[in-house]
Length: 188
Image (cartoon, rainbow, N blue to C red; front, side):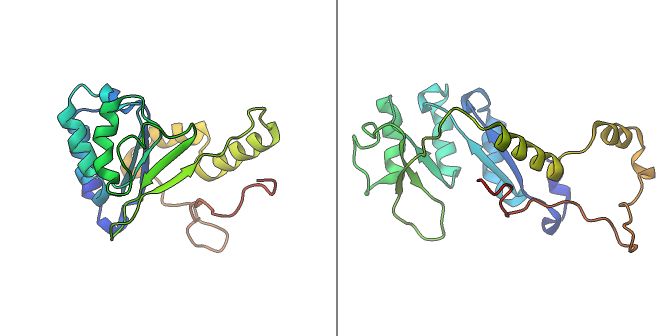
C-alpha cells in the first residue's frame, strides 16, 4: 500500500464501501482488514448472507477483524449461527432471524464492551425531490470534484515540474476545500 510510505500524521482518512462483498473476498483483501486502521482506511462491507462466501474460514477471519456489525433479519440459519456470538448474551437464538422488516441489531466497536443496539431504518418516500438531489450533487462537486481539464493537465505534467499550491491574493497557499458538517440545504 502506498499509504505505508506516508507518515502516520499525514495519512488522511479514506472510506471504502464494498457492496456484494463476497465478490471481493480474497485472502489479500482479508489481510488488508487487519492493517486497515493504521493506514486510516475505513471499510464498510455489505452482503446479503455469509453463506455467499465460498470459504467459511474467511468469514471467521472477517468477523474477528471487524469493529462494527449491523445485521438485519437473516434468511439463512447459518448466518444467525455466525452472528449470534457477536451479540450474545443480549440476543438469543431466533431473534435475528425473526426481526421485523427494516429493523436491525448493531454491535458498535468501542473501548469497553457494550450492549448491542437495536433500531429501525427510516422509510423514505421514493417520489424524490429534484431540487434536493441537485443541491446535494452540486455541494459534493464543489467539495470533492475537479474539472476534467484540470485533471488532464495534472496528468500531463511530470511530477517534478508540478507547480506548488496556488497562491491566494494574500500570498498564502490556497486552502483545499474540506468537507463541512454544516447542513447543505435548509430543507434537509
